Length: 56
Length: 172
Image (cartoon, rainbow over all chains, first blue to last red; front, side, top):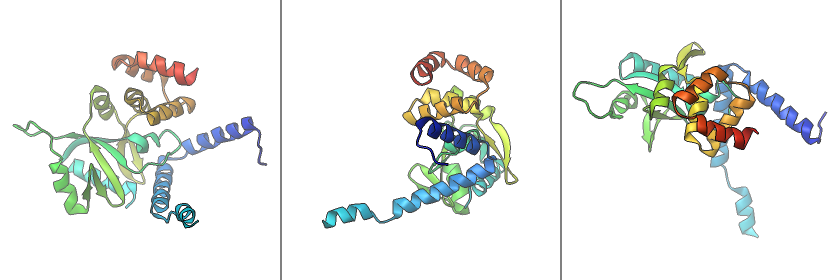
């Protein structure tokens, strides 16, 4: 269940980091590839926020 | 092109004698020990074969080998497939030691070498940019360092004072 208690949130982040760190190296390289592809797609995408602002 | 394909090509380069020895450093190497953090490039530290009468190490050897195999030059990078790769000579005694003592591993049947966790942490401490400090905190919090080996590196490479300052600022 989602918690908004800060300690629970931080503990859960720590658990997620540890889980990710324990993955095999090959799996982590696949994640790096996916993150890079996503980053490049976002960087290449339209700046919708900016154009909306300039239209007003 | 996947990272493993880049590594296979670098292995070919080593076997063909273009470079002496290589190891992965930077964020890709850190991903072996920590949660993976997004990165746009691959840092590969290389020892070059130095010919007799050759005073300077030239990246031309790398270009001559990799460009016919589909790589292209973009600024400081050689782009292999989708990945910008930065080939770096070891910039000091610590990086030289990291290269010599890099950990042998295998990714999807491709053999490769990666800087040890302790060397990556010591290099982060030595380099000292904000992102290096964040990486060093992650190494400590994740318990990824062998404290004996790390302390030996700190002593050998004159980093004990920097480490004390880091501990005071980030870990206390």
